[in-house]
Length: 120
Image 1 (cartoon, rainbow, N blue to C red):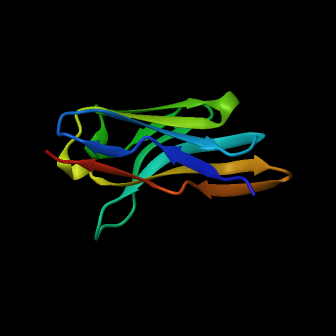
Image 2: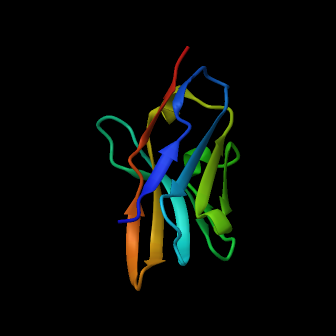
């Protein structure tokens, strides 16, 4: 079964930067959209950034202007560049692939989550 594998989380000071990566474990024929969501303790999972195969983007209001999503379609990989990090960005970040066409079926895939902690 194909999986998404996320990496790049860690501890960073306020104002710092991190880059998250998420790659599919096997080759996927096509993916409609790839994105990042996050969930902080006691809160619901929320959209961070989304990028469609056509190049359209959507960002959560709290990260606009600070985070940038990019994608390598050939490698089925999505990245999240996070700049000017704030303590309120602390959360577990999950990558997502929507309408991933794999071996004749469509799937919604989630990565395992990577912890981002912003603290001095």
